Length: 422
Image (cartoon, rainbow, N blue to C red; front, side):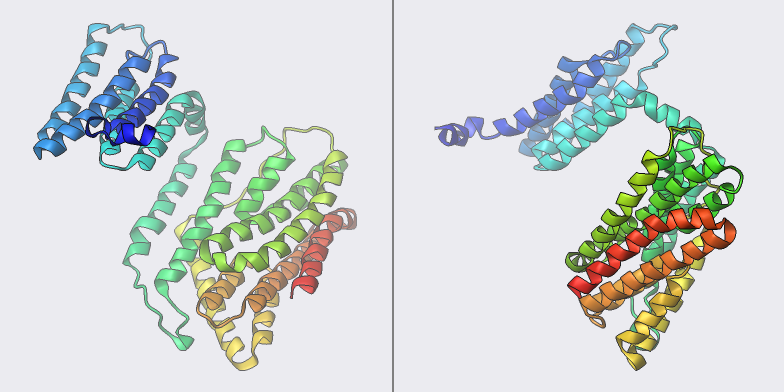
């Protein structure tokens, strides 16, 4: 009965108008809570419906003027409403509401043209931006010139340098692809930049867990080094340093899972059990030390360089290209054992380069999935050994022993999973 009802020609487009109505009510619900807004639930709902109606008339008459005229009418009406009731004491000038209602009109229009999912997603994003006004303003106040430069530099890496690079395989073994190499630079810089900005926003107000999480996203090695040095100052800060270091090193596993899911999803069924095993065992030891730590919110954030800086990005790109070429050469003359040797050596200081190299060779069909997982796992084990040595020499025996409980547990989880799966 319902299907026959909707198949009626006069009611065939009713679902489009119902969707527009829902979008308008959703956005209007947030604006209704704002006392300075001159548009609320009913206005936004009507504007969304008007957008769909204007799009329908434009299509039926084959004239875009209905849609354009509707946009001008909506904009003029809202601006006029603010001008008529202008109050010099009002903090909100109304520009946000004007922008939101114009977006609402546009969303109603694209619903008619069949982009319903996109319209709903944009409606949710719009409502989130409107609702979290205070938080977004506070966030921008915490970002200084250095942070804005970091974001702009990442934009240069992504939207200026990447598009002009050639996407073709060149060099020995056809392994060098400038576009693919820089794409990996953008990926690693992007993940690191998220942690970098988050770390800057967190500052010294939050505890060891957040600093460890974000520090691990940016650079677990740098975080380990900074907090190991700081642990020399007091016995109490040593407890903090242990928790931060352990969490930062667990984040390496999560970071690798994110990278692999983007670069080579096909390897995940074999790689995820290895990463998950190391994460679970390492997490057990980390929770133990965290419970022994009293609440402490004034922990200094590590001083870590901008991961999107052009020099930093270019250095990683060069390292990745060298490791890729070296690994392909050794794999050709020594088989998988050659790649494993590269993984052990390069993994000492950088897990990302050999991980991306292994994934690239796997996607090119030059490595089996088991060999790829083994190479990535060996680089992680090598990296753990390097960091433990660094903690011992930079810090002292006591902090090295305590950090070893979590880091060796992670290594045992990775090694145990390898024995079972490979």
